[in-house]
Length: 432
Image (cartoon, rainbow, N blue to C red):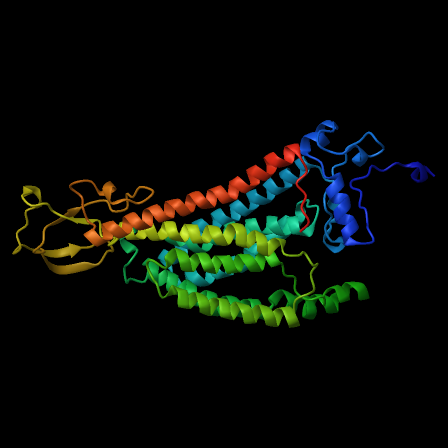
């Protein structure tokens, strides 16, 4: 009897219309500024738009019914933020684990095993991230996909691109040894083109569900649940694309042919995803173009900007030897061209029986110390390693990368800030 009189507070009110034109007309008429909603005082809103002639409503265009997360509508803003922070902390911990283990594998085992483990991380960790994002509270699937996209993209970008670059010694950037960066990137490209699609195509989780869990299910319904097909998300698939895009753009100054590898990887990804989408994956809710628009507007553009900064830095650091020509008349750089050294141990541990001095006098200079934007002036007067054409190209690349970064920041924050300020005073609803 008590349940009949229990009162529930409304989390949201959804209004349906017979036509889309009527919906747009209502949204246009009732759309108010944030200050008007917060203070319940009419400024620009017409008097007929007041609810019960006294209240200003907070009106938004509703999402599609199958994308709404109905059980999360009553969650507060503080609860959503706390849950997202917890999810990011767990993701950061997994990223830190990857940063600590991958360099050890690369140094103490080999680059092939390093690339295989890295590709495995890129497949397994997003599954954990998806479970963590399910713990979060989101009003609709589009918002959930954005959160999933950001979390997975940050992990994959750091894991695939940044870790390899940061853990490579400066003198090993252009080397030919197994540990050197180009060999590591080559192994990673082959792994992404061959190993990752095979592992995804095998659908190990689906095999376990269908052939192990389903026969042991207690009820018919639980058995059917194991035949729904593999789960996929648009956010995870788009991050796989932007990961390859960033990998190719970031390392293209070192290795221009990498773009052909990138085309091959994306070609294999397309056909693998198409086959799995038609044959193995389950149907997901229709979330609209939010994820693709979000990826194109922010992460694809960010990958291009990061690639431009990487190119400018690489051309400034070239030839990655930490050697500069000695100026004329510098007695400290005087060298006897006939001098011979025996039993020389290199930094890599290799021993040479004899080494003859070079006919050209060179000295140590720190080529890794580059300002932003990269500029030839940071070399100094007595530590010059750039050629004239390199100085010109570094200047052009440096300022182009700086302009792109400024434009990206202006587009990222300028539009949001302008929209927010306008929304304080008036409604900004426009039919999409």
